[in-house]
Length: 289
Image 1 (tube, rainbow, N blue to C red):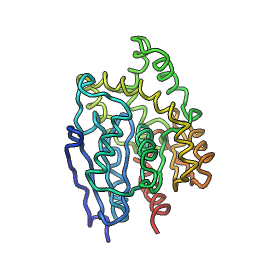
Image 2 (cartoon, helix red, strand yellow):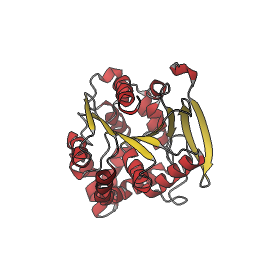
Image 3 (cartoon, rainbow, N blue to C red):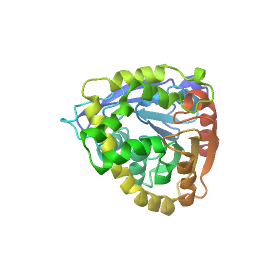
Image 4 (spheres, rainbow, N blue to C red):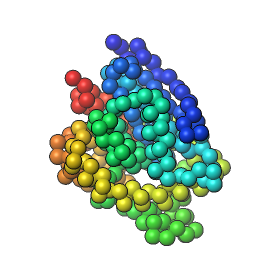
């Protein structure tokens, strides 16, 4: 079966009263992998990976509420919390009738995916962890400088620091930092993301999510306990030059999931422009026979 046998398709469905967009590819009879995107992007980040997985997996890549092609209600119309983002993803999973799946998680995808795992450990057949944290030692200095003042007290001053994450220069930096060859990183990444970040009202709900990120840190101990109890099959593919989520965060997973396979990539926070083929091969080696 060739990769082109099940071309990528694009869908929007009503979930909890909101339109949720998702990309789909592959044979639904094959094992499902759900791709959970990071910030400030969307399922768009997986456009190069999806066709490389579609010959062996049923691939689903949703956009969270407020991201990509999904509905983006204002911060006064929708409570932008990680619990709420997760609730819409789990409702989509249920609507699609998915009973078991591997979770690929990057950046914001970790807090969403680890919540799903905590709620449905028997349904999650494994993790692919790519530059997302569940351990405080993995939070790099640039991230701490943004998050810690905001979590201590949300004020115009602490919000000003967090707003640097919405700037066009920061969006580009997140993609190019640590890249082996910056010329290999498509400018479509930050052009697409920044156009959505610049929509009126987006700054307000992004600040709400950055503030709510402290609930993820508060959940770390409970996630660790779930990792130890259930020992999910785990592949870690980590851009080792990431200043936001550092290599210490990748190593830390092995404390609670000792059998996790850790693959270092010569990349930064986002890795797929240069490493999609490598990541796809590692996923297939880990999760298919």
